[in-house]
Length: 250
Image (cartoon, rainbow, N blue to C red):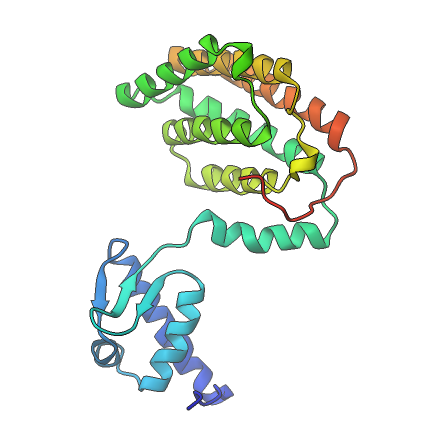
């Protein structure tokens, strides 16, 4: 039997129930069991129909997970960057965004992350960054692969820099843009058969990592900008005017 439609009079009831469900989720760690359906009806003081309508909305937002059957119930959840990027990607595709716009957007954000990261003296994170820099410096030319491998390593680097920068807004924006960058078609690989590009970027990225490790904010900003300029040059040469085709690289 289908759920009754939400009338204008009942909409505010569903809205309030949805907000209460979000609050319950946010007040609990991810994956916490919030209760059975009957428990939630009692907690929120709503009808079963209202609860299900509210839960459907909040589940679409990825704040709760509803599991049916034995061991089921309502569980707290958290949206991921992919929940944000799906809609953003559709928006960009609808407005014919191209890859150069994405790479131009990454540069300033990455430079600011580098500055913030250089101020963090966390020894554990810096040791991990030191290891990453050493790998970049030692990587031989024959280790240079295509765009997918490049993007994977760049995301690993971004995770380290983001952890050091500790700025959730910048971290989210960068993750979104990197997810957009993954929309490059396999037939449009800017790095395939171009190992010199990969090696040049790795060397510059290692310099950026060293600047962050040394706590040199000015050099970190400069080398970050140079890293972005390298990628901008490649995309300008190979992707200028091309729009998203929707096939992810990773």
